[in-house]
Length: 441
Image (cartoon, rainbow, N blue to C red; front, side):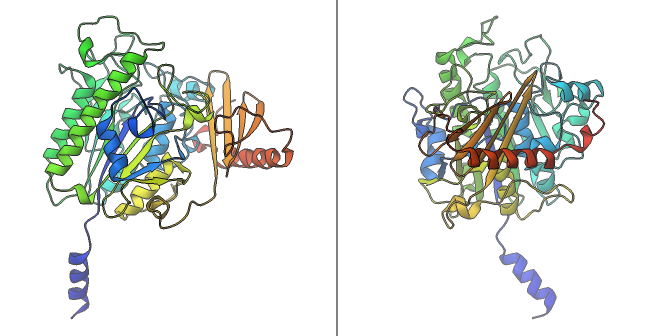
């Protein structure tokens, strides 16, 4: 056999790269699915992923709000490296803290094209790519998903929209299809599910695909499918009944996506992941954890995470590995056989062996920093120890015996606190964003 014949034979026998379907809920609490213990929610489609795959018990969002979490999830890197995206971009492309305001005035508030997303990495290796849902990484065309490796984009630009009018709270139309405003009729969650299924149906069998479906549910305004005639949807406050119904209606659409994968006959070579972008606000449940969305207490950053990959991840298993969103990116990239872009190495790590149970959980240090208005919230976790810095006020917690972070044990453990404080400061210096070097602050 010649070398050319050997290579051709090897390529013919190599398994095709996996399809990837990444489903993201918006503001869903860590306890707000059946498989994570909810007693008042029916989520059979989401729960099926736990039954057929892995349920994670130490999964974290990279941030307690939408924009920074999505930045980390798509780039596989700490969002601080980008700069200006450490809290949700405000209504109409508004910066909500000093660096973000400075970038907005320069027309740079959003994910710059210099950053490499998972979609862009996969696209250059032959994947078809689509984003159906919420973007929230910049309103300007230069920050569009179409500039970041997505062949197809149908969704909203900002943080939230009326589920029937597709407008933000100020009335601005933010629903786009490949850059152009669109005004279909129907319920936004259903629009996303229907479009995702339609896109899957159009895939050629021989080509791998990456489908990213960031639903806007159950983020406010609190509207269910039955609220079509409501002209004044509640945008804020606790609305548990609507929150539950919105989540269940999102679960219906997730079920439709999973059924379409089965109908295509690609279940065994498709990785499906489900997660939330941060903890729940009022109306959702982060029990038993302290805090909520926009905070770095466990309730603000813990997230449900489920992964299904038949033949690679054991069905009905639990994973204790501390996993951040950026690890999902690195793990999916490795599964697809792609590497990080030059000059943009992943901060996340490939954890497929930990997820599959082939290797025990590995120890690691992980960090959070959140900025909004005058708030500066930070945290560092090493093993069971977690340091929280709330606007300069420190507390130390041992999550093994105190997952609810009720007891501050800083005075009794000054050495641990000092080590985490030093590690946090070193991390902050290491992830400083190049594009903020000229920031006058």
